[in-house]
Length: 460
Image (cartoon, rainbow, N blue to C red; front, side, top):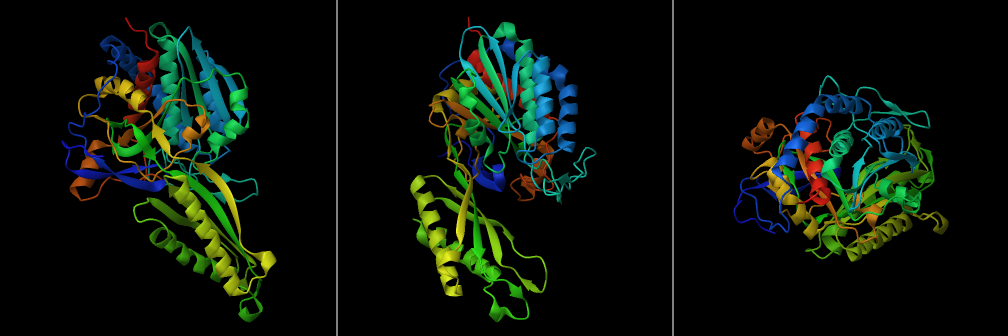
């Protein structure tokens, strides 16, 4: 996919720490609109309402940023969402998939639009130095403590949802239909959307969606939004491989079968899966994010766990990767002398298919986004990336048109400085230095509100 009028390319960061080529932002207006933008008057009301709400939203954002919660533990965040929605007149249901929250605002006849924000944080120690930086560790159920940080902007996502919800409640005379907003747990581990579905999301009587929206932070300049059609993100799998050996004293390795050595051999062999098993033109990624084994210097452990992450665009590539991983594991174990009843095991965890934005829906909302943001501030065409999301998993098999937008959160001057130094962006998602410029807080709320009103606004 090309944009002839924008020759220079940059790297654009996405969820889960991966990057993609994207055009620069000048004059990137190439999508034909199927409907006109919402009125100037309505855009003015959106701007006025959210500008007035910005101090409150900034306070909420800072509070959420200081109190990150990892997957399925987002109880404090969920309570804030529920309280705010209830005060706005939404019908609120809590506790879906442990911490998920759904709010429904009915406002006459018309389409039903669902909007999602994810709530969970990352296991990262923050290094931003912000006065509202996360500092406390999170205690887990087993008593251990970990560093936690909103290093992917989910605190901004929740804040944007609350800003949009308040604006939609205030502008009820301007639209007709049903708005459903929901705060989802556990996006980072790829389990939250499916967990909500498994917890009877679609059997609870909520209005079924005609359209769905989501948005995500990206460290591109504040004031820029990427809203593009087609395949946007890759499918993802999170899986654990457990090697079982025979533990023993470090001084007598001949008495053991070392799972750490097997793990090391497997990690190296995995590097051939993409380079030697798949078609060279098939995009895929296999990464090992963690090796957990042993504790003491002089003890060879009895087992080791490898935590793998796969990215792919087609089911056949996914199956090829899984098959080859199993073959490598089996071969490594046999060569180490592992008994047949102790062969390595594969445990599948989070999974999500590719994210595919609806072409007609993107074409419908982009004119309004351009009217809101200004010329050259809406990127309508981008190549697909290896980053992944589970947003779309909530609507799997339902034929719901959806659009997932990327909202710039980096200070423009900082972004320009990085570009001048030959760096694609000033920082990346999941990095200890990741932060959301406070100027992006009202802008994200405005973008989300405008996209929704592109569907629900009353037309002359």
